[in-house]
Structures are given as structure tokens and as C-alpha cells.
Length: 301
Image (cartoon, rainbow, N blue to C red; front, side):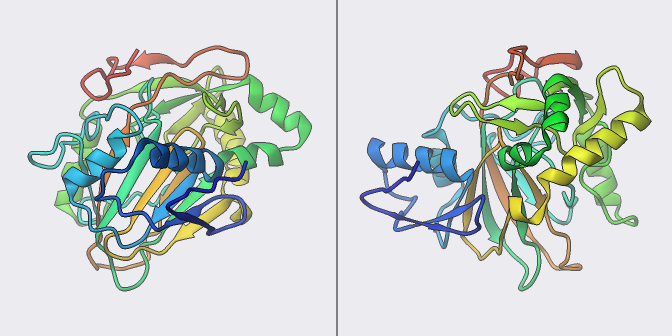
């Protein structure tokens, strides 16, 4: 599928994932055809990047809402004051230098995420995004068959955002992050609801394979995760102020590179609500522990 919009260009950033969208001002009231073209590009490239946008929080929320209902900022972490859909991603509070898919510890994770850069360091602080469908296709046949059959428990009760050891602020953030504990079982291979592609639905929140021991789980997850993070399955985005990244949370993982010392880094995140994942056998994800997260997503089961 090749996407060509009448009012913008798409420029590949990497071979298997990622395209820069050129010629779109996200402050404008984009027509339905343009939104449909952006949606089609997202399905094809998995991650889209918009350079130098002059968006504010209202504009970011308005753009994200063209693709579905919004979640609130996070199931446990407070939103930006006055903006219930906006999450501050602040390096002073923690650094998510861990491969993950957003909020997979609930039964209805977001379908898509937008990240907008506000303060970026003069070097470092890039974001890596991985194509989990390409990773699935890379699996040897017998390993792919195993992945199709197994499920993983995802939880927020682990050290996701790594704080500096001496930071009281980040310790407090950790306490907030796990103030409500969630455990959810998801298929290790998720079928994308729009494209039918299969992708490895794991990442940092996946802490255990259902019905296996911790040791056995760790080995299997590490093996599968290695396919996701192969360099050829990733794209690396070098932030500049005002950039917006838009990625399909159903079939990607991402990682914030912590290589900028004590310099500040601040982004704002707005996410689009998503449905309950479905595995290769047609079964749906289910909650093991925690509420239905209806305070977070309007599409919670």
C-alpha cells in the first residue's frame, strides 16, 4: 500500500518503519480526506513524524481526537493541570529507557500515541520506535507457532521509569505509578484490528508468560523481545522543539534513550483509546488484577 496525499508528502525515515510527513500544519482544521490519508500512512509506516509544529496542548488534543476518543493522561499518574488528557513526560520525574508499548497493563491499551517535544536537550534524548509486525515476520516458523499460542501477564508493578538513585522526586513518582496495581493477560501475538497483521505484543510491562515460571518466562520473553529490537526493525527520531511523533500503539514498541546527563527533557503525551486485544486464536485479553480502568479509557471492558 502506497499512500499519497494531495496536500503533503511522505518521506521514509527507515526501511521497515517510520515516515516524516511534510507539508501539513497541524494547527489547521484538517479535512476528512487529509485525516484519512494520515490514518492510512500510520497503518503502513507504523510511526509518523511531523517536524516543527507550533502546537499547544489544545492543538495536540484536537489532532489526536480526529483518530478516536481520547484516554485520560494515565491510569495512575496525574494529568497536566487543567488538561485531563495530557501526560507530562518529564526527565526530572523518571526516564522510560525501557522498551514498552504504552499502558499495556490495562485490558484496553491505547490504539495510538502522540508525543510532542517541548524541551529537548542539545544532544541525546532520541526516541526509538520498533515495528513488532516485522519482528513477528522475522521469527523462525516453529518459534512463530509458539508465540501464536502463548499469553503474557502485563503489570505496572515493576521499575518501568528508571529514576536517579538519589532523587526523592522520582521515588515519589514511582509510588504514584504503582498506587493502583494492574495485571492483565494479553496474547503474545496480537492481531491488528484494522490491517489483520500479526505483531509481537510484549515489551517491558510483559513480566511473565501465563502458566510458566518466572525463570522460564524471562527466557522466552527475552528471546522474542530480541526480534522486536533488532536495529533493522527500528527507527530513531532526533527531536527538535515542536516535533510531533504519532505511532500505532497496537503494533509498535518505543524507548527513550537516556544519554543526555542532567539536561532537561520534556514532552507531552496524548493517547487515543483502543479496544481489547485479540490473539491469533480469536481470544480476547482479560483482567487478572485491578479495576477496569474506566476512569482512564472510555473503551475499557
